[in-house]
Image (spheres, rainbow, N blue to C red):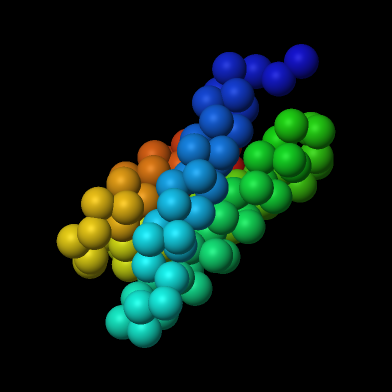
Length: 106
């Protein structure tokens, strides 16, 4: 059985994945958004992998969470620089996910 903190973190990872994918859709094709796009791609992938690792009770889940938090922090910082609504929502989702993952990695 998955404890409540793990469930919260899994949901934060899934929410962050969705926000990153929305941000990617919004920014694709805009050369000025290249850094944002790359970080959103990395972030969406690690969030998915991290959620799966926690769901299956991987002994490496804390390691996944530590890396996920690092990438979410970087993605959130980049997205926060942009005025697009999708970027701002992504930045907030990244912040929430990073916080949840940091608590799981501790």
